[in-house]
Length: 209
Image (tube, rainbow, N blue to C red; front, top):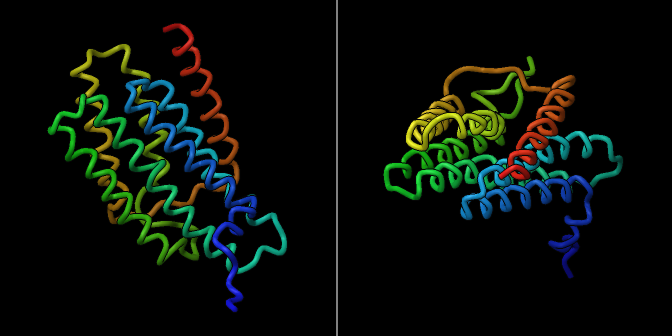
């Protein structure tokens, strides 16, 4: 008789539930992007970022979590990030480009960069000085959400070129040979406010359409 926990037992862990909520938001963002509802897709992607930011702090504040819960939670977090913070922006780009083959390289770049970066981070983590290699993956979702506000200002082709360029540059920065300080502390307030403000803005755009 194995003493290993059942697979579904890890879902009863609150931090893992938060991770799965983030994954669900990312999948919802993909679905909405496929429908061409970009404001709603952006909102879903932003909330995926917010859930991703808070699963770690919640995990650190819950006493008595088993090593299995911690280990599986860490792996779930990376897998969820690939969907929400790499595949979701890629689908937004492809959908906005009307699934033209020209947009495939840009979508491929962000997904490959995300996989490589997260695999590297899973092995090496945060350095003793609090820095991490490359740009953190959640920055792509936050920047794309901000850039998308220009979609109504620019023409379709001009904005498509801007979105493509933005994602291509971010893809390089995710794996570039530089280090940045991990965003902690007051950044939680900044990111929370950022997501809430942009959620309100995009909700208004949805309401007025």
